Length: 371
Image (cartoon, rainbow, N blue to C red; front, side, top):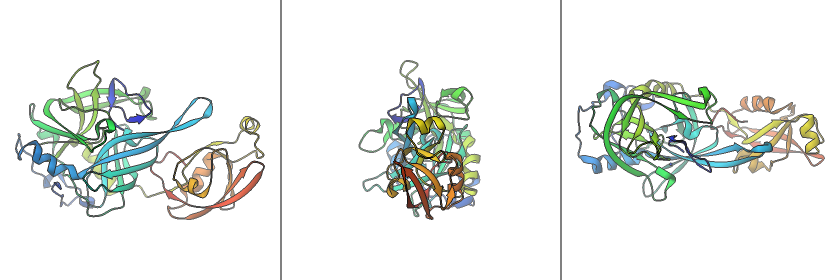
């Protein structure tokens, strides 16, 4: 189902996004990620029923909220919110979700389940956009986890449970139960935000079909067997006009190589300013009465981000960083990428016919798409 964006409209085969302490894996895999040999998979239903499974898995299920800046006509932008689900894979804060849940995000917030939820800022450390998989990292320790099972051991008719933040409703995650309806499905779902998807449509193969309800907001959440092991990653559901009781999940066996790669070799954190910029052109300079002919024009600022805290605002033009001239938005991005999160940089801004220099403490870039 499509990422539950406010505002954003879902598609027919909708990518559903962004809306007991499980057994902690103690394995030989990287950063606590269980190896296949470390997990025993049942051939059928067992493990104490749905209530027991929910108590076991729920602490490791998280709400994933992403701030997404959308381009409007005439160069304007607005900030929407994507709501999806994820699950904690390791005690030190690696989390799995769908790529479309965090796609294009300028800020990613992860909130734990339970009566005393904790909130963390997250960044993407790996994944595969075409496979619709993202691995996030939060700075934490001692987190509850859920183990990976084997989708290859699933049988038609086997009971499964889906947990996620459906429809971004208040009151915590939603639990739905059903059976495995089909295996090895191939489906396509439109994702207008996917830059690498052919015709902005993502094709999924080897998909698990279930009649457990999967709605917008469920994306990225776990589909588990009755031993509380993840056998799928909830991804898509058919719209009401197409079919009833049809939902889809990425088979966990298909996802494991991507997940393990991200955990073993996470992308290094990169500095983040928290602005959306465009190059200064003669047309833009004339239109906005700019007094400079170069630089990165600030189209939007992430609320609460480093630039916002330093007083940088829409309509400002960033003309230099640490004394080095900024030719355009591309050069600004390159300069920021050369710095680490937490570093302090001086940013010179042209605004209203005058210039000023502010000091910015860089944050951690959530996704490799913005300055």
